Structures are given as structure tokens and as C-alpha cells.
Amino acid sequence: MDIESLKLFVKVADILNISAAGRALGLAPAMASSRIAKLESYVGADLFHRSTRHVRLSAEGEFFLPFATKMLAEHDAAMEAIRAESQDISGTLRFAASSTFAQLYVVPLMTELLDKYPSINLDLRLGDRPVNIIEDGIDLALRSSTIQDSGLRARKLAADRRILCASPDYLSRNGYIAIPEDLRQHQIIGFKDRKPRLMTHAVSGATAVFPPQHCQARLVCDDGTSMRIATIEGVGVSMNALWSVAADLKQGRLVQVLPDYEVDEDTDIWLVYPKANALSPKVRAFIDFLVEKIGAPPVWERD
Image (cartoon, rainbow, N blue to C red; front, side, top):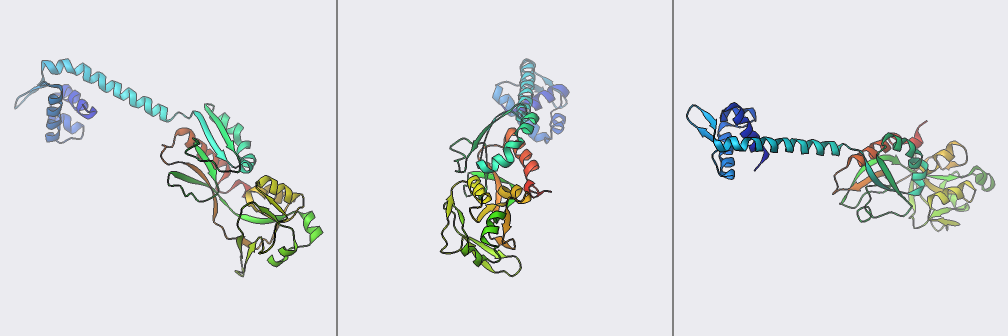
């Protein structure tokens, strides 16, 4: 028994005209008559007495009418409850991100977010090793690489780019770096298992790689924060995401090395969530909040 047929039955009982009731519900007269006939077949009784001029409720129709009205009312109440629930921004949200990025840009926003959404609880899974979003039950994750998993969806949070950095003290002790070849005379800080990156001069188009070929890193890190701190302390030259060193550049703790060279890497920061899951209100609210506060333009590039 479908809801639309019940609606039609109640409407016919009200105005005692099948064609007019059908038109009121967007049905052609023949379709309205067919639906009433199918409903009568379903309940096993004639709900109306029909003549060429008149339609009136049968005894069975009068008996069935209050039940049909109640079923429609319960259906409407259930739909209202579902709609209300779908707008309820509440529950625990499991969010995974690199600890470096989260400590700089996400965690400082938590007071504002939790005040804005008092029914949300956050479970932060922070670390530089990626989690399995689906297997670990993560609602939302932050990634800086292209999404390969067809079971995931993503929304861009912000553009990202890589730059070379060193501390002013290191450069004063070891000399200014004017061209990529100068890097061979300097100490390199490398990130574990990261492949050499191609760099292109913004004007001439000349290319180079970092680290330089056959140049062994003096220090290798598997943690972005540790590499940044080592660079500030004057260990050597490193390649960093701009977001990770933006504050250090502004405050003079670091300077950009070879600023005319751009790293040839299409890197963006993405907010990723399981494709199979409907985007819940709490996840949608968190995504919108992060995009407003962090992205477009990225907060680290704002004045």
C-alpha cells in the first residue's frame, strides 16, 4: 500500500470526485481511477460506490478512512522527524590529519568550533602516517596528495606549494645560494623516502632537482615539525610546505632559498571522506568551517 494511493483515497473521500481529486494531486483521471482500483484490490473491498454522476463512500470506505488518515499523519510526522534529525549537527566526529598541520591550523580553532556547535564532540587522530579512512571509521581526513581510492570523495581545502628554506644564521655561516649548483656546497636536510623534486625557474625555464644528484643529506627526518625545527636551528637547507614555515618566514626565523624557482608539483590540501557515506550534517558543518577559516585564500598567505 503506497502513500500516494492513500493520499488519493483521502482526497476522493473529501470531495467525492475521483477525477478532480486526481488532478489536485497531479494525476490524469485514468491514472486516478486505476490507483483507486488497485487500492480496493489491495484491501479486498470496494471503498466507493460509483455511478455515472456520483461517487460516495461505501461502508468499508467509511471504516477505512480514519485508519488511512492516521497512516498519512504518522507518515508526515516520521518525515518531519527525519528532516529534523538530518539537520541536527551533533555527535562525535572522527577527524584524521597530519600532526604538523593540525597543530598549526586546526587545533587553535577548536574553541571557536566547539562553541559554535555545542552538540559536536571531536575525536582527533593526529600523526604523520596516513590512516585507512574506511577501515578505521574516520569521518573526515586531511590529505595533501591526489586521491587514488575510488571509495573516497574529496573537497579542496587550500592550494599548497613547496619552497626551499634555511635560517639566516646558517646562510651567514655557509654562504648565500644564488643558483641550484650552489646547493652542492651546503648541508641538506631530507625527508625520509621523499623522491627528488624537479624545480623550474619562473622566468628562464631552467630546471634543477632537490636534493641535487649525488648529494647525500646530512640529516634525514620522518617528521615535518622536526625538519622545520632543524632548519630554524641552522642544520641546513630543506624543502618545506609553505604552510609549515609561513610564520617563520614572516618573523625572520627562516628565509626562502632560490625564490625564483618553483617546485614542479601539483599539491593541494584535501578534505577526504568515505564515498559510501551520506555527508552528515556534522561533517558538512566541519568542512564548511575549515574551508572558511583556513582556505580560499590559504590563511598562511593572508596579510
